[in-house]
Image (tube, rainbow over all chains, first blue to last red; front, side, top):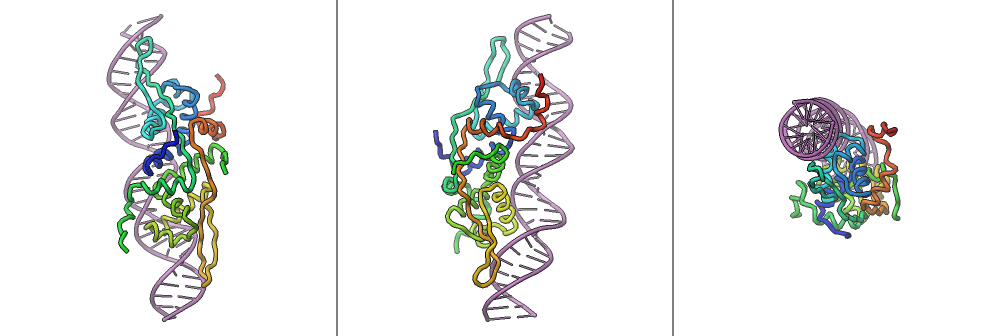
Amino acid sequence: MTDQPTGDDLVEMLAALANPLRVRIVATLAKGRDYVSHMAREIGVSRPLLHMHLQRLEAAGLIVGTLELSEDGKAMKFYEVTGFDLRITASALAEAAKTLSPSEAQKERSS
Amino acid sequence: MTDQPTGDDLVEMLAALANPLRVRIVATLAKGRDYVSHMAREIGVSRPLLHMHLQRLEAAGLIVGTLELSEDGKAMKFYEVTGFDLRITASALAEAAKTLSPSEAQKERSS
DNA sequence: TTCACCTGTAACAAATTTCTTACACATGAA
DNA sequence: TTCATGTGTAAGAAATTTGTTACAGGTGAA
C-alpha cells in the first residue's frame, strides 16, 4: 500500500498507535476481524473503553468497522485492519512536515 | 538500521512522534545537527518548550544531544537524529504487542 | 559593569487523554 | 417477563501532556 499521508494525517496515525492498548487492539485484529464485545472480553477491558479506542483507530484510518446482523438478528459491529504500511525515518518525517498545518508559530515569515 | 524494538519502546517512539511540533523538530534535524537556541528561533517556539520536546525525543532514542563548547567558550547543546527506521504494519504491531508489558487487564489468564 | 549570547529547570495553568460507572436501546431464548 | 446477548453514549474523575513565565547559572565583548 505504502501511502504517503499528509503531515497531519501521519501525526494522527502515529498518535492512534501511541498507546499500548490500541497496539493490542490492532494486534488482535491482525489475526482476523472481530466484534467489539468479543474483543473486550478477549483483551480484558470494558466495552465503553474499547469503543473509545476503536473510534480513535478508525478515525486515523487504521481500522474500519461495519455494523452487521448476525443470524439470530443481533446487531454486531465488526472491525478489521486496513492495509496500512508506514515507513518512519527522519527523511520521511521531513517530507511529512512540509504538509503540516501551520502552527501558531508560523506567522513571522518575513525577515 | 531496521531495528525491532520492544513493544514498550515502540509505543514510546510512536508517542514521541505523535505531535506536530516534534515532527517539525525531527524534520529540522534531518537537514543537519543544530543547537537548541538556534532551533527555537528557527521553528518559532520558546526555548523551554523546545527543551521539553527534545527530551521527549531523546528519551525515545530518536535524537541524541551532546553538550559542546563553541570557539568563544559558550556551552552549546547540539542535537542530531539517530538512524531510526520503523516499519509500521498490522503484523509488525502484532509482533510488537507480544513484548508489551502486561497491563492491569492481564490477570485473569486462567479460564 | 552591562549587554548579548548560551545553558538548565521550577512552578503553574490549560488542554487533552484515559478510564469508570451508569444509562438507554435492541434481539432471541427460557 | 426475565435473562443473556448485542449496540451506543453521556458524565465525571484522574492522569498526562502541552505550554508559559520566571528564575538560576555561565561566557565573551563593548
